[in-house]
Length: 307
Image (cartoon, helix red, strand yellow):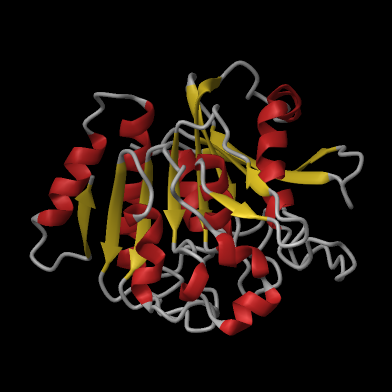
């Protein structure tokens, strides 16, 4: 059962040393307490504003209406900031993006105080992270994935112990010979992506038509690497016919969605919410019920497997 949602933006967190202060959208149900948190990291699509705190309304509104507090920052990679290319991490700001999420968790007091009626209603012991596309890479870092900085060769470990579960939506796969020459030249940190220490439970959502030819030579299966190459408890949701937009999760009626499918978006909404509900509340039957319902549909939108 859904409830009305309050959404406040921007909540601005002064951040010395960052190119601009960190701005966050906070969306939450208007009623209820003990609300779990979802940190949502945006992707890097061609639109100007979806890659910011103003994107992903189909997911944000659904999650908040079903009992989650959704916190979505505008990362430094967002076109809305137009920061140029002088920063050493530009254009994708791979490390800064993950540090944004950690900073949000460090400053929950300020966030609660900024949203009328939210103080005291958040369960800080139940935190999940979600991300789409490049946001999936960001989320994977908090779950334990690693990469090597091209400049100095240091291994970047940003695993966050306060995060109990994750949802990776059309996330990048492994590096090495799986990525294109374009990626190796322009985004070299992708070459060293390593999921071998990504132990936190996660739901990996991948479209079986998501070829991402500019990123990988392996085709759609590349987006399943976070499932197959990581240890621990993982679940894979493969969506039939889905491309990189997974039916249109990044916004309502957006032109960059190449596989617009409202039913597919509904499936992503329901299944991701159910997965996180059951991960954050062990014993909750939401995920099993949702997965069973998907399996018995006469024309299922996808399939689920777990390890």
